[in-house]
Length: 275
Figure 1 (tube, helix red, strand yellow):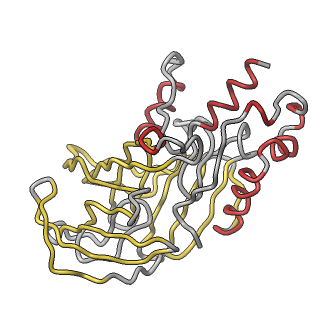
Figure 2 (spheres, helix red, strand yellow):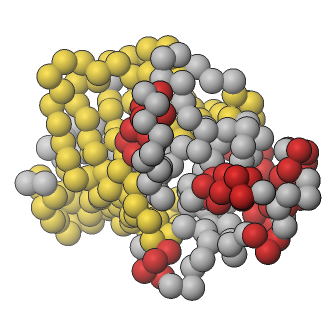
């Protein structure tokens, strides 16, 4: 019982954005396909309001360190904390837990085909498997404003938008000629170095820019994925948050009777994409 409860609570530590990535399935780092290679790496600090125990707004905010690598045709956005955890597991270093805010997802943007692939390494111990969905690279309608600021020595200009139910302010660097940015954001005449929603529930801020000494392969890890659509993924998460006990009974029948509602922290579904 203690082992089961510990596993369940560990999974809940990775409550994330929409898809609200719940889970701590380790990526087999030795099984992958190389899609492209990157010369630059941009590191972002991602702060977000996790979806449970939100009585104390300060304690409810967690952090993840995330990376954007950009190739000639494909970019990848992923959690460095999550990747480092998977590396430790691969090397049998098991005494260091996963960082509370680490996110088990990867986002690939394929610009020649205008496609985006989102993978969710939820794993069999949380949402019943690993998932992926594909959609067009979103067209975000920006309003570019005259305000400026400086981030990491780069002069940045302000832009605002509404994207899938949230209002955002972004700061982009025209000196960095890439229309990319953290997570799904992009479409500005310069790389987005900082972006946040109006309630500061989700904040991405670039904290490092690195010219790589040698090209870094952009890897797609070869897991067994269930392919679905974005809104189908949303339904899975809504079902989980509505009744996690019943959800677990459905996907992990061997846990029936081992976990009760009293074992769970209070949770709410707080996706970054509201529509």
